[in-house]
Length: 208
Image 1 (cartoon, rainbow, N blue to C red):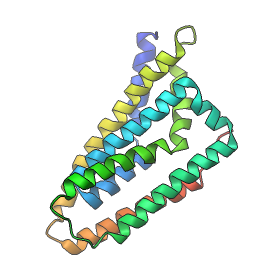
Image 2: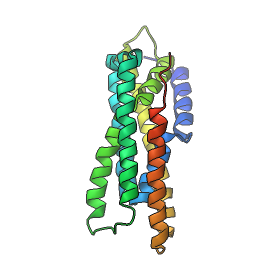
Image 3: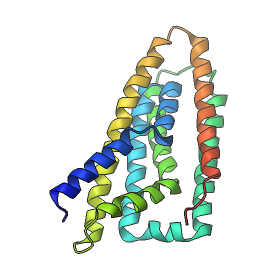
């Protein structure tokens, strides 16, 4: 489908994008600091599946339609932004609640679902895939297959970096485990970060 040189160039570019801190990384850090490693890992996988939604949508042309429609883009960003803000407020309000014995199970499941929704409702992710992947697609071959293949690789790289970030964020959280007051402040800060990410998404503009 594509030559070795093009594929290697894509891998280099995709890896550079993956390791560059962005909203997804900050979201993962916030979730891990607020809920621990389990929630961080679940959120990472959830974001990855949410990213796959955009890959499949881009392959069949749905993302192009969304980006071409100001109304659809606005609706999607409002839904995604408000959802993030709601998660942030919820995290802040629950900051002082003690962790029940089954928090790692229930919290991880919830974080997984929320991660999917957060990424799936982010039109900026759709814009990224539509701008980035076509640069490495051979128009003489099956475009949809190439788009999905490169998209899967990109999502895998992003998820891999998110998992690494989760590991280090969890270690940092564990270091403050004996300081309950600090954990509360960390959860509150995590909630504030989520609200900030939501506000940023609400202010996002559609590229012409």
